[in-house]
Length: 388
Image (cartoon, rainbow, N blue to C red; front, side, top):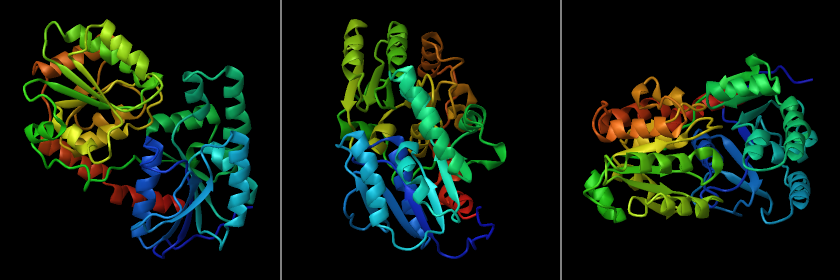
């Protein structure tokens, strides 16, 4: 049985977090979320321990205890065994709250977690379904869902999701009771993502063209993010907007296929693949663009790049997928495409580029992000759930 004792949230606490990899070495949205969240929690004078795979032994100026449980380069069975054994070896003291973020790495330590400590799981997406979309077979997807995800979720007391869309998935597909699900959006570091450069200065720093309309997107190059459809949309509008220029930041398994598609569509002078963008260049890239675009086709639980772009003063066009509309609807609903299809993406891009739609100002974009998605405020909401 779980203890009913309430923790005094005004006291400092020992919060144990189990994540994935280390940001920025593995620059995924989940890794960034955990990195920013744990940093903010530590500012509260909480003792925060982050366990994960491939974490550095120590990090200067980071007020978090890092505990590396395994190497990401080992076989999966070795990794899971290492997670379990190293977790046992490194335990000192009982945490006041446990925060899990990834079902696979949580699975080996489930029966080692103290039963009287509340466990909160941050549901970042349906892992089995996302894996199936990226090409794993149905049997492996079935095992991921029913042997791993379901087992882990059954052990957890409460859940945090980034959007109503993912709350619905958690409730409907995993049968998690609605009263256990808490919706708290992701956050953005408003000190790092700023609107402190003119578009001209930002373009100069990156060597981007000064005299062309620029669209920017920062994405993992995988199926669900819709970059193939974005390229087709650019080809569709090119006859009417012949100087349009698309900058794509990110790496992934589809890089070769997308570059080939770019050539076949005759877009070599209209599309630039930037590869991995160093973290210090990402805010500059947002500010250099006329607007950003998120053409996702599925499983977009939040859309971190949207709030990053807005914090830099840059408007965003997105598809009506997952949690993305929940960010933009209160602010600029006319920038959400009518569907995920190429025609709808092309139509919206053209309307924006030709000035047929009102575009929020840099100041309004920045103000909206700071008001609603400042990590300092978001982390306090998360902390209240963890220690409830």
